[in-house]
Image 1: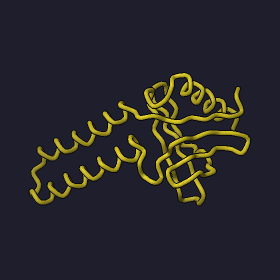
Image 2: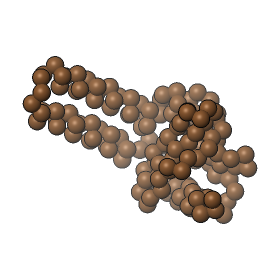
Image 3: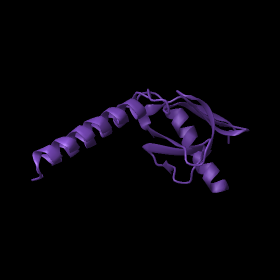
Image 4: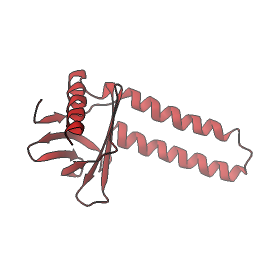
Length: 142
């Protein structure tokens, strides 16, 4: 079992498809609701803004808090974000499955969280396999 790990995620078409599909579905659902048009327009604008932020943050990784690289070494977990390098604690609500890994971290102050969603196309298959094994081994050790 390796005692260090480093991963630089790449662009995920699966995540982009999921984000766009869910937001587009929500906009289509608005067409079925019998509410005042101004209220529906407001919700549609909020959905478009949410789509922009989600794609920019999670797919393109252009926001200040977006994770560009992550790893684990003798000092614990670390994250390289657009706003600098941070020491981090992996939170217990992390999800590890065969097709997606969702990592949730606490950085700097207790209320600051960073998350990253990694589908199978977000990194080399061997890197993701090692990450899954590492996370499962780490959770069984705690």
